[in-house]
Each structure stands twice: as structure tokens, then as C-alpha cells.
Length: 254
Image (cartoon, rainbow, N blue to C red; front, side):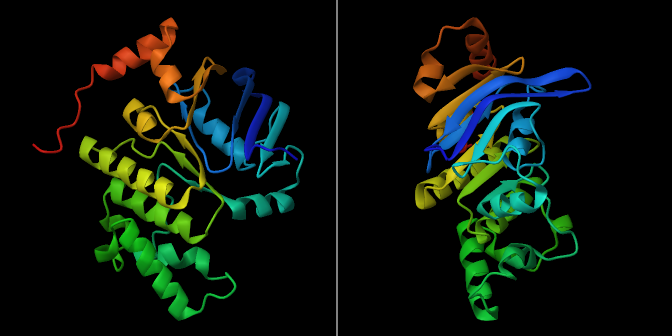
């Protein structure tokens, strides 16, 4: 058992001889939002897949929900996936189900949820994620940003202890990215669930992070509060921040 909700202890993972994670260590306490940042290919999404048990480390230990899940068989990992859910980049919605049916999907086998309770919960989540007018639409009729909002609503329907977000603002326009970030922040402030957010977007990171993990060449180049990341004079961190500052701020009043 661990006092941390999620913890990586010297985790190493390689694919075809290429080391993606190299003795990575960090932790996330209950109710915290941890943001994982770094350039493409440094192992950010691979980290999320280890938390969900989709990948096994070559070395090191992985703690989730305070328990060492490193050697758990698939049938035991089902327990973790009820407590921790993941919002994928694609949204991973069911194409043949409407928005309302997608949100309702995790409620189908929850005890105490009959048709009326399911309908009420779907309506509540749809309003929270600002998709109430779209409940009868199919995913193919939605923008990428809206699909992610629906995916977040579906994740919340499961009532997890923790939510993992994989690049929630990528492949959308700046206005949609800012809106998605605001929605995640609203959920953070309302529910105080443990969360891990993988992103390359420093504006989103600053908005959400209680702690930041910055991966550099598969290793932890920084781990700590956001203010310490902004104050760091490490050359690779300064360069990363400078590149982001060159991107103009979105003027939402224009």
C-alpha cells in the first residue's frame, strides 16, 4: 500500500530495444491533478497506458489506487479500470450510439440505476459538459472538440476515483482548446478527483497542474509545482517555455 494514489518507482520500458521510459519516478496524491509534459515521443502516453495496466514495465513498480498493480493479472486489472478511467485523444466514442447513449453506456450495469436515474444522470452530465443540445446526434456529426467533451461526460458517468486525459487539446483550434481546458478545470474544482493530464500545451498545464512531470529523453527532467517549473533555469526547460511563448495568446474577445 502507498499513501500516494498513483506512483511510478524507477519504471523502465523499452520497445524493440528503444528505451522510452528510463527509471521514471513520480507520484500523484489523492485529489491532485498531475500534468505530464514533454516533446513528442518522450513517453507521455506510454505512461498513461502503464497506469491503466495496458502495458507492463520492464523494470520498476507501479502504484495505482494506493496498490502495487505491477504484477496483477488482467482479471484483477478490471478492478482498477472501474476506479480509473481514461479519455483518449480520439474520444473513442461508439459510432453507432448517439451522444446520449454514449454517456449512458457506463451506467447500464451500475446498481441502483434504472431508466429514470440513467436519464437524469445523462442530462446532468450533458449540461455540465455543455452538450445538452446534442444528445440525439451521432459522433460522426460532432467536431473533434465536442467529441472529447462527450468522452469526458461518459468517463464521469462511471464515477471514477481518477481520470486520465491524453492530449485533450490537441488537433483542435485554439478556441476549442481553451474551452476544453476550461471544462476540465471546472470539473477539477467541482469534483476534486485525482487526475493525470498528458499535454504539450503549457497554457493548459499552467491552468490545471498541482504538480508537473516533464519528461526529457525518457527521463524525469523536472517534477514539482508549476511555479518551480516556470522559475527553473535549466536550459531545456527554458527553451521549451520560450518556444511556447512565441505562440500568440488566443484573444477570445476578438
